[in-house]
Image (cartoon, rainbow, N blue to C red):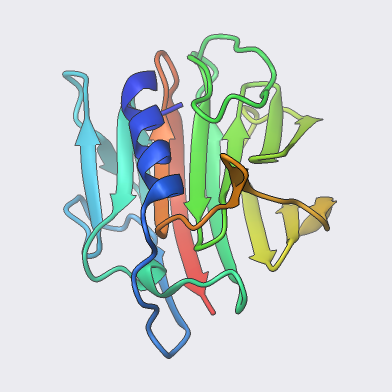
Length: 215
């Protein structure tokens, strides 16, 4: 689900173990509508394939092994689990993406998957997309929801606060988690804020919106 499985694993491991930076005082948000080609302020775009992401008619098309990650100056660096947050995107998984297994407890994901990783100062949350399902997972929970992600662009939104998560698809709540926990070697997780959109091996996606709110 990342530029490659090894790189994504390293990123998540660092996020889980690093001390969180001091949060900013005020809520903040940022939205990308992809009306222009990159670069994008507050984001870093990387790809490990010969194909540059293509922007056309307000939609950016990601080929496999491409990663869009927050950079210095991103409002997400202000996020705290206590105040809450939201991430949202509108995308269509390309039908040429290969079939992939359902999401599992492996935070690194699988080939053929597209992923949005949102880490606050308490735990990582992953929204994963296969051709035939969307999944919501954190360290101790995996929820797979069958749906066609290739027929058209769907709007997805994940909200987190405390031990609660909520997933909305096209404006309708489809799943919720109320009591997740995150521990690493018996200790409470204290990760650094991180937000990343990524395509895995063979996966392709067409995105016309990506946004975040750090309360």
